[in-house]
Length: 408
Image (cartoon, rainbow, N blue to C red; front, side, top):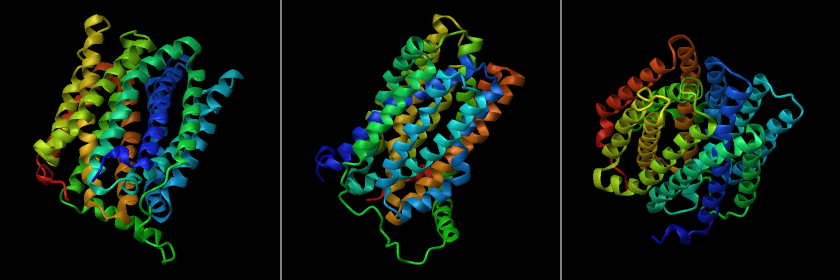
């Protein structure tokens, strides 16, 4: 079986992923600050901005899965990285010439989301060509750990950077990270062919999309996992949209403290991803993922209980720590399971179907969260998000997925 570090292609892919993830943690915070602080966006407008990031997944996600299964994934990854670097550069340029507006910001985020859709569909399906099947779960766990480390230091660094040079200029850091990632990905050499089927066979776009949907939703385990994941992302979209408004406007904390709370999510993710292999072996796939799903509503519960004092900051940090822990445990086990039961010629469509419809759920959740925040208030909307997370965990608990096992 060997070790992950023995597979040089994976190591380079891992480093490239780490570089872009660090930059992305800066933009994730900076975009929110630009909208709320610089452009004075309302809750509804913040919801629309967040939805724009994921709208391409709703419109084009299934098509992306077919493309990834038809063509090599590496060129898609490289091209998307270079293009995202250019697109993000528009924001600091517009700010420098005083052209920055909410419609322009939404347009940039929409294009960026389209490029990210292509990247994500290829990204999730690329590791099986870099490592043997028995190393897939640890391979995804390492990616999750790297993401978690970036989420730990990234938000604090982003908060400090935003305070020093401003949110629009801080986004340049992410643009540079995508350039570096693209260069590194160009040096990767896959150990096995990326596409299982030859591309000279007659193709039917409708048939191929239908095959991907059928594979995901007709499975008694994968189908229920997918449906409850969609519910999870609806209420995650509600929560994350309202959370920024709640912290900046209701609790009157600044971007630095917002970044600090996010950083604790990264700490939790590091620990969770480190534990995920042990949890998966000890509890099994179904119970291991259910553990993460039940931790999430407990994590969300901390936010509506918080106030703008020191104890409130502690509660917010604890909530994000638990959320990171849940995602860190859940993510690698889920990815290893999904990849292990799916034929190689369906990997792109399976990943794109689940990821695209998960992100499409945010397109629903984010603007709904903004509307609820404007009409009900921040704290009541956070309670609604908590209730939604309890719902998704209960749905998965009552399904056949609790008996899911990893195939050899």
